[in-house]
Amino acid sequence: LFQQMTIPPSIIQKIAINNVIIKLKNSNIWNSLDLLQTYAQETEQAGQLNWKVPSLYTATAVNSPTWTLNQGYAGNGSTSYINTNWIPSTNGVNYLLNSACFFIYDRTSSSNANYIMGAANLTGSKFAILSPRIVNGNIVAYIHSDSNTQIATSSSQGLTCVNRSASNALQIYKNGVNIKNDTLDSSLGGVPTVKIYVGGYNYDDVLSAPRTDQISILGCGGSLNSTQQTDLYNAIQDY
Image 1 (tube, rainbow, N blue to C red):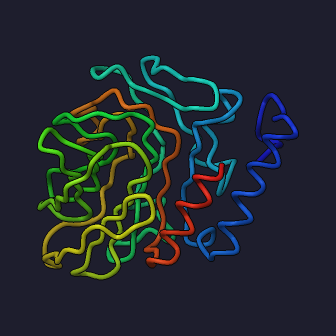
Image 2 (cartoon, rainbow, N blue to C red):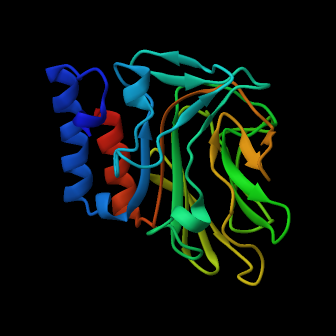
């Protein structure tokens, strides 16, 4: 990972990154991940790398989203976003139709009708989309279904994870705590075939419903259990 960084990170940063990876490995989370982009870095280029496989799926900043040292990216709510360059249907190894999760760490307190990340195809109802808080105060999530799951949250800030553990089972976690279990119709939907965007979602290769929240981390992988969700939050929070 460090070899892929154009400007070497400081010793303090190296230790912080190493500690997160060790914690994720000790919790059996690391092997479940396919994508981990940590935009909160000492340089913008370092923040675009995929920690899991640094030579693959480097993020692209489109139309100049604002990058802030050790904090992350924020879009402008209209045209700017992050393209992860990762397609769930073709690049997912652990991320599968009925065993999947995606998560973001949001540094902004906001409520609006738009979405902070995701990918979607109209044909086949292939949705993987997240809003950390809409105007009614709810998290809104889609995962491989055209129907959404909602649950009230006091803030968009923090770690929000959407998890699909079976063909008919979805969970939403907030800061490592399970706040919603829902039943899915396993006969509907599928895995998106377009790249995941951050700062809005990718709707058949078009940026849709963008918002301005500042995002520090995005990850995708296989389903994580409740203990792993807590461990994921603690590892990220310590970072």
